[in-house]
Length: 193
Image (cartoon, rainbow, N blue to C red; front, side):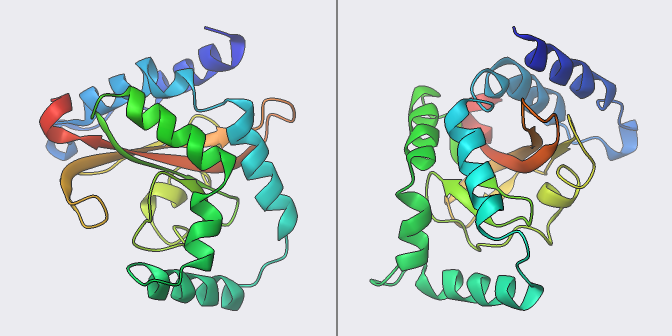
């Protein structure tokens, strides 16, 4: 485990205390999977480069522009004409994420990267929406800082049509040590637990 992975493992350990009444019964397994599997590949250069490139492409994007892109994405999902969806899914980082998902042998149901605004950078398949910035998976990771983790409840996910729990973590640039985005990994509740 390199120094970045060790630092993140320590940060994850510091965020594991959850009151018993609020604890997700799957949280420990989800955090274990994040630490033992996801941290091995999530900071690969293709992931970091994809987030850096998207952050550089629109540093001053407005909320109105974000809302328009989100509406475009939602209109494209399920339609024949999908230029925005295809632009995300055809990136090298999406192919890399798809390879990681395939290697999980069904444990991972989806993976998507988010930029500094919570917009999709790369994904293994179309998500329900393009903008994740208004959701806990982004707000409780990217906005919190390095090593921040959000563990969602296990539920039926409409984009994957499977019972899954999502675990998300902030993504730190290994050079600048700044948080540049976040990643969400959907975990198959039936296979993992």
